[in-house]
Length: 225
Image (cartoon, rainbow, N blue to C red; front, side, top):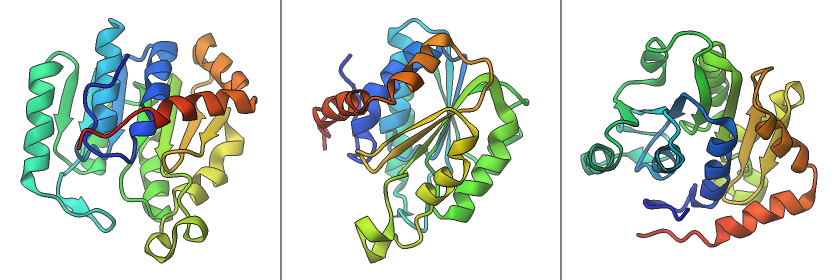
């Protein structure tokens, strides 16, 4: 599949893997924390819709901005909202709340795929994880974006980014894989009864060729704007 919506370059390189993960996991409930202009959220919706997976994809964001992204223009929310209504009216649900407020809308063990892409300080990432971990289903997977941004490789502006530090602190607890391209993506298999297809992906990721394959595909994805 070719992605239909790429509004920012930061996550575009992970779209091929997200398509494959949706296919392997066949989730019923997908939750994204931090939607912004919707590149990753639209990819989840597109994959579920194209594969005829009866999933609901929930995007949670205040669309007000944060300490790293600055203040958001209201046009960003209107644009992704209209896109979802036109293209994925039966799949996409946007929730304009804080992550804490949004978490109260989901029962424990009901979220099959959680994508964490909110404020990136260590404390914020840790708080999001602890707030949502009980919501993850028995086959659930957590994605954490920007696990390859550090002060050492990105400079002074990113000195308080802590996604990598947090991912490194918990990854040994779960089957996992980390992609280094497109600012990094950490994958944690939280559920103890996930699909065989997901576990095969984790096994295959021990090969450098697996990581290079998705990195090559990711490089072909070009931002529309």
